[in-house]
Length: 155
Image (cartoon, rainbow, N blue to C red; front, side):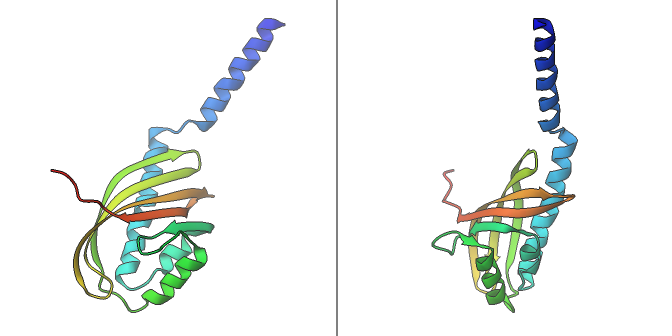
């Protein structure tokens, strides 16, 4: 009886591990899907629109842009979307820094280098960003975000 209990426990633990383990291919696929979405968000921004961002946000979204005093829920993102209409001069480059995946939750880390604001003002700004994504069926939805002006780096 004792051996049967131990074997059952070992098999059960092995099954839990198999269910929660991510293969390298799954992680790569998720990273690629999410990175495409991230780039599409900023492509929309360069055209003066946040519609793609809003459409890909979870109803439970909360994000903290560097311009806000506190995190904003989805309604705040929708308000930003309305204010951004027509501001289509933003220029930036994106650099993927890291990515992690656990089950149906992913966090992506990237750096933006902005050389022109949406209103056309020339700048030299770097932002560190994270977005938290959750799997929604076969798709991914953004549920959390944080961006900050990158601190000066020591050489």
